[in-house]
Length: 103
DNA sequence: CAAGGGGCTGTCA
DNA sequence: TTGACAGCCCCTT
Image (tube, rainbow, N blue to C red; front, side, top):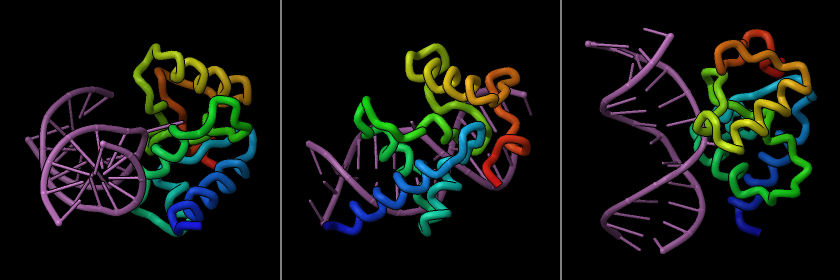
């Protein structure tokens, strides 16, 4: 197994452990698996998940508390909808990270 | 090996 | 508050 495969798995495990109603930024996820500068990689890992994945990828947003999809896109709506169902409040397209960031 | 492009970020005007 | 920019660094061509 390559090291990038291992990193991918670390990211999956961490994302899978984010509690409902909480969120992390891409950079945070990267830091917590030991690679602080790999925020963009985290994004591409989540992007390449199968459609039927059980992973709560929607609990990962950018550092500004905004969804990183173009507003109005299908993916954007799905992510926002799932988060709202879990109790995450959006104000003008933004999440208050002070309140909802995981720990 | 080079080039292009990402679900990013922090800084600054 | 927004937008532009420059770092960042991995993966695919």
